[in-house]
View: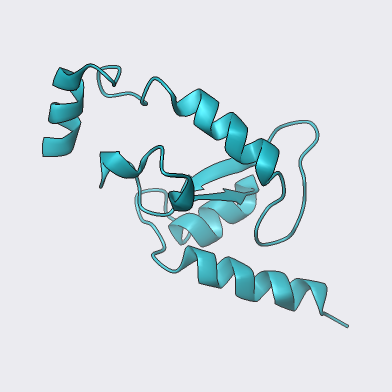
Length: 108
């Protein structure tokens, strides 16, 4: 909460919203990593989601950190990124998505 207040007074946030550069960072991440980290699908009609490994509400300084981002399709964003509950988050999402990606692509 304190970081959120500090960012407002620094002027780099919209009141309660995303950082002014979030759209550019998201677009760059999706263009570099367009496929879901779990299933490997690339959405054509609607882009995949960009998941924050550490939610920006928890640490606003991680919002634009490329190392804190992971591409997930909408279904896997909820399941792997938030453990099927949007208010939660998975601290092992990178490892879990990598593990299941291997399982999916090596299935008989």
